Image (tube, rainbow, N blue to C red; front, side, top):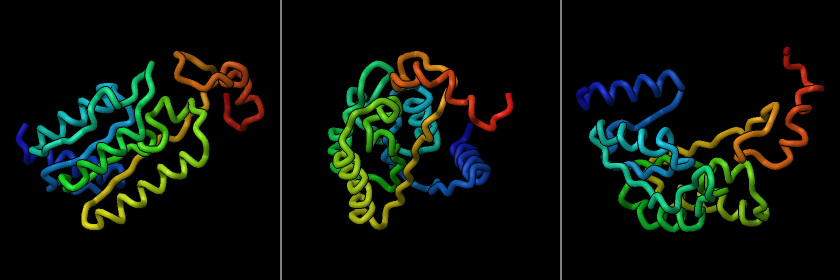
Length: 169
């Protein structure tokens, strides 16, 4: 597939999802929500196929199913590399909590979360001419817990959380 068609595909996806994407960027700084291929490698591969350079944090800092992401170290990496990017695409789950699973299961103090949120605001203030796209995930409420990626209270409340809800069964 040619670079032109990949850029067209990105634009069509942006339009279909009501997202604005600068497809003429040469270098994208990308912070994924975790290290799964769908979150990290597929995105990097797509950017490269479209002729972009993708900058990502060192993989050992990015969260996985069984280990926490290193939010403060990823922040340091972002701040060191932000000047190299034409556009930034940032997982707020990673920058605030450490990763997707970390956003579901954490005991971080509110002050830490607020400080990390202010870092996002400061990043935008320091890079006014760089487009910054943040994305986050709304926490799900499954009927049952599973796989060790849910908060421990789901085991107690997961099966009954929908009993008083208006969702048709």
